[in-house]
Length: 127
Image (tube, rainbow, N blue to C red; front, top):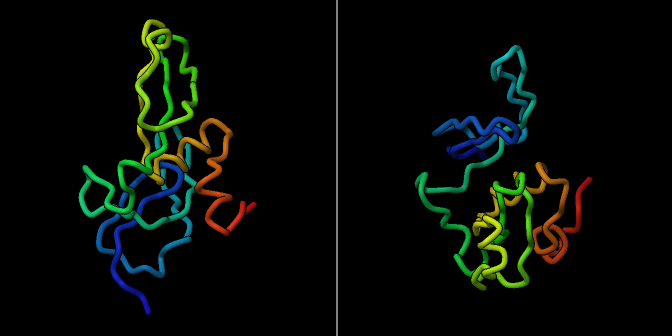
């Protein structure tokens, strides 16, 4: 049975509100500028408001350190609530906390896989 949900494009992050859930997984084809065509898929947008992610407790957020000063280099801390070491702060690193949706975008951009989201939930990786 279809229900109303908010949708987000997996590629260009366009959002649609109050759509039928049977549109999840359907292609989003739209011009995204410079003659490019978006070829993403509609996914469910899990937020109730644009400012928060109720599906993810702050203690479960994925954390990375990113330095735009060093060309976008990424450091992966061992603990998500540890402060950034001074040696990294001096090099321009900043803490970035990510919700599950942001983690998926980060995985695609950097060619990495979050172990907890993809392996520890019993589903394994989907190719």
